[in-house]
Length: 301
Image 1 (cartoon, helix red, strand yellow):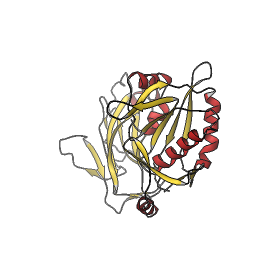
Image 2 (image 1 turned 180 degrees about the vertical axis):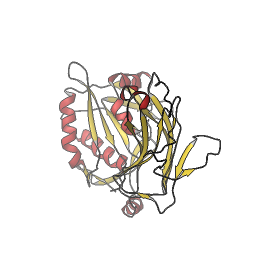
Image 3 (image 1 turned 135 degrees about the vertical axis):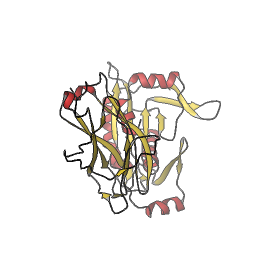
Image 4 (image 1 turned 90 degrees about the horizontal axis):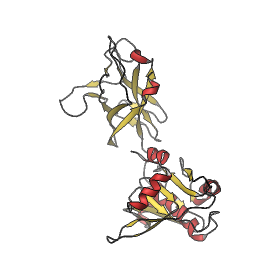
């Protein structure tokens, strides 16, 4: 599960389970208790600014607000107690207000979400994506740069900051799905979306077709044309593979459709549950990512 999916699916029950299981903080997960729900506390401002700077300057991450974390026997910070935030909706609104002031330059894509109980108290979660527009300086009285290493935020050294100023922008790829038709005529078109700030060259996409689906032999347009060159299957891993050389690019903000899966020329019955498509995706200077995209069965009926 990627950071966006984790951010959108997190629930109060999940947070309670974090405490019950003594969930450890990770490279991408940080727990923070809140001193004052209006974020007027010096400690709260420090926590927000340092986390925004640290996660954005590293690999991105989530902050779960309203959980006390302490070191366990292995000297790793883990969730030990719920510290519910009074008026969590107002707290989240205040997070939104301060986000633009807490770092310089601003970070694109930061999101905050309240997780409220019926009485209005509860928790909040913040999504901080990795940024290629950094380095980002923590403000609100900090005026320093942070990075995430292991389970902690550290002040960046001068050479770290200098290196980030010279870091070039990178592409960021995701698998997309588009449904054409319904019922036994449904087709699922798979594509590559570039969410980064740099063009992606030499893209690669591999996927499977869970039964009863199979690769649509008539391609994207009915004339057997597909969006990328098909690569041979070696008999291992994902059977349908597509790739191009470095002269082929997907520009920022663009969705490039590659291939489709369908129920065949002689249609079979739809499955009875959601369709899970396993994939692998990468490009030049983009690490291989393996995952699963889920197509809800209700959208195919």
